[in-house]
Image 1 (cartoon, rainbow, N blue to C red):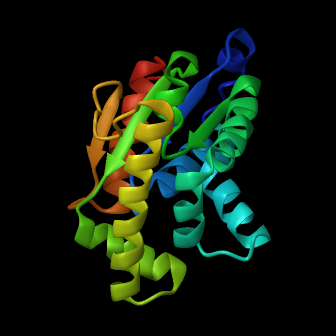
Image 2 (image 1 turned 135 degrees about the horizontal axis):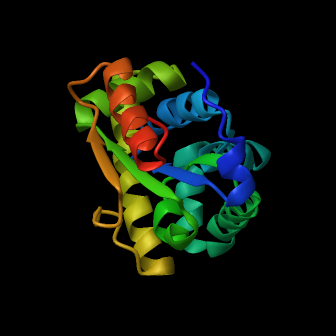
Image 3 (image 1 turned 135 degrees about the vertical axis):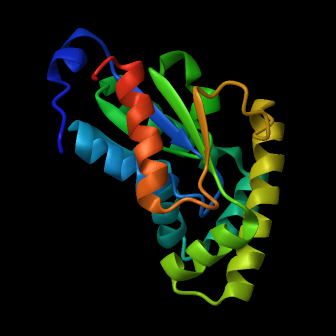
Length: 190
């Protein structure tokens, strides 16, 4: 069910940013939306994972290192911003909605309760639930501290988002339908 947005992309720099905590489903929904709308897809999470791999660190270790070294986040932010400027894109990022709100056509926040997010992370990363819980808790605390310290951003403030979706009790398809219908309505594609 691909929708062609070439006419919109030619006229302006269409940018949709999807944010949310680890395991909330932001990557899943961003990929689905990019595919259905015929837009490019970029994930800052993959850039973070690549840096961790290059440095032989796991995500928790890199998050802790990033608390002391702002160059790690700045490197990822620059990559995200460069992709954003090209337009016609769906970006999946923890932080981009706050950093680049003025450039975004739409910002969407997806959330879920901790139990569901941990289960998703466990399945995605092939780790047991206990390790997923530990990793999730550490990542959330380090994200909050880092983003507050480096950018003065409180990632608990969701007031800048055009749409907030709690995916806790929704199937992937039901949550995605809410997101897709919202985007179609806002972009006047109906």
